[in-house]
Length: 441
Image 1: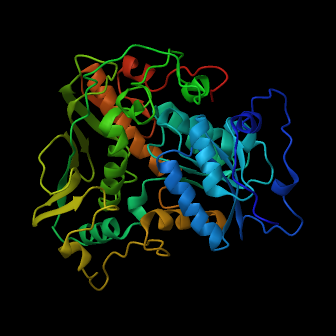
Image 2: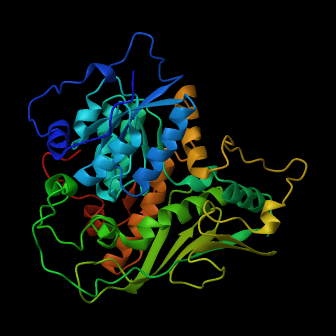
Image 3: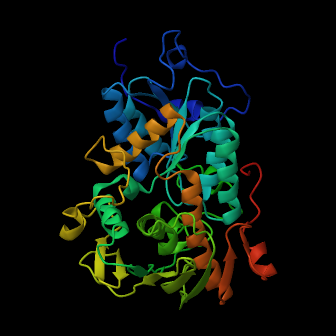
């Protein structure tokens, strides 16, 4: 078939993006599964939900996989018409554009979806995708509430879907080298892990509410959030500085740094701990996440502390990172172990005879590509990926409880088995929140 022209008009996008209310949506013949189309074990057919920012990175990665014969890209979706048009142009030929993700989920020819929407959409779209029989790659943080995270895990398990969370460090070489060195005692027994990170920005130039831009479907952007008028300080990327949609630095980068820390400490199964947060709130503007913040997580059996510092003590040269403090020294990991290299002593570390060998998918030098290859392997083999949704949920729980402790102004005792705050009825009521019809679990 000859490559078709990538000229997408506003009228064509509105038609293709799901403004018609009736179901089922008519799918073009070129998108339907052919009798000889390989199954999910050989060549996955993908839909991309959210194609701005990291969504564009994911789409470019999948184009590389398409050139390698590993995937088909059947559909792209975004609530922003300009981003959608750009994605269609990038992903041609044969890709279908949609504004509403639900049209992608009803397509039987799509095996898996890549979700890179704002954080408040992750849980709803992941759960619906699993219920529709799709495997899922979802951006971090996994969720913005603990109840959402529980629903994501349940949906993945009940529908036997591979759900990979995009915390790429666990399949990247720097974090793997650091994890190997730490677990084999390079700095002895580690009893404290500290994180440093720059402060959350302040909305120091507030603007009035206004009509949304013509290209943006504001109702669909809000989705499960309560209704509110459009404001330039809500989106696109600045949604991270609002508690209900982003959760600040701790839920954004903390989702990376905490994932690495738990992995290095072999602490994925240490689900119970105390949380004690302190910080300063902004005094003006719409953004409401804490500007400065320190959160101390205390684990038992084995005993160790994880400390989120915002800004904290900047030990390395980069904007953020972790330090593993042992009784025989310390080891720094810049950023979270993906975008920056590990310390030379970690990269050069050799596992001693009988030592701990940490498995890792190692197909691609690029860590974003490698993380997706790990997901493909899990889909093919029916196994769990490196950052399975249960791991992602536990990491997001650390982030969400840190914010909750800050909001309530008190220390929390978390029972990770029951997934409840011990002896705190008010805190437990805040583990979830209502979602707006019809964008709800």
